[in-house]
Length: 77
Image (cartoon, rainbow, N blue to C red):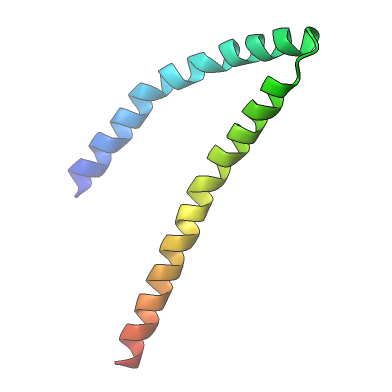
């Protein structure tokens, strides 16, 4: 199990450079669109960012609830 976690951590660290490279491209595109008067694309990207931000927290909440419910059931037995 420890090996799997280390491998996953290494993959995330190595692939994060590609993710960081996209920020400058998005920013440039949004600045060009806003300066031309088109704010619809910027609003769409902001909504997408909020959507991606909320999903990990929602997944953690669901897993926490399932874990809590299962631990309560085991205590009753």
